[in-house]
Length: 365
Image (cartoon, rainbow, N blue to C red; front, side):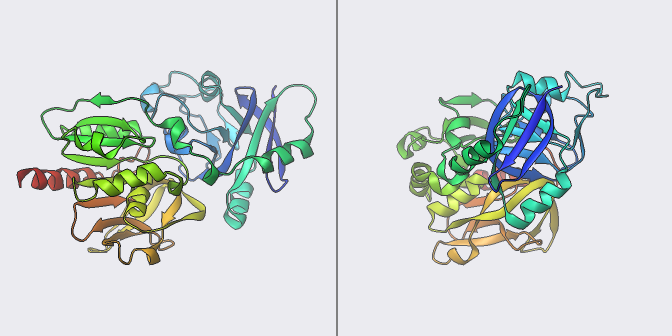
């Protein structure tokens, strides 16, 4: 049996059983409250640079199906769980979780009191952490703590560079409009939702410049979800600022934050973020509440919207954070949650339908 250690920057040390790949992983420890969807979460590029912890106590009971992956592999640095299932039962399962983690060279630790650790993060905020899966003698714990403390934080790393495409990629949907997607770490489900609406997607790197994007003649631009602190993406923010007013702009999650920064708003880091499949979002015009999938550690500052032309369209009833904005004059719309819901409820699929309506109106002018 492989042994495992989870170390936090405050010196907290937890011993458990290792699964997945042997070795070491570093990242910001965050928790996800979804009861299912561990394959989608692990492969979500928004988790790059983070160690994912599931609050649901049993993980792996339905195995792993490659069709559920949101990217080309696991993007989370490591996985922390209470208990893994070694014998999954599901007709779709192609492998167990342990095998999946090994194939992707990602270590995990089980036997952790995830309820207690989640309470700690909620009280003190997310922390830098490290997983070590090993055999033999126990390592030097004080040295591991020092090493973890000295690692750069999430706001000191441009983690988007790890998950953004390096070249243009096309995804054909049919005879509908063409949309440029600035890839900050897009999920497959977003592309699938667009293709299902006959949209042709051209995926471009997050470092693409303003002229190259406009010269494609695309009908609209979508800035995707992705990991990390949006404020470090200076070049992307500058590009989006130049695009504003030239073409309809849409944003999801990190893309929502980038659009807000490009128009002069500010962002800040949440204490422990929103990660799960059951987060309420209220439409400010209708007071209707949707249940949404979310995965983000930063938010747009309400008090910084004055003078940007942006107005709030949706709010989070739990903590009052901004969940959606639009521009008063320009074709700019963005949401903080994940309307593609992979995993999660389908309450907000109409974000993509509304996109199509806005693009059709813009093209017909």
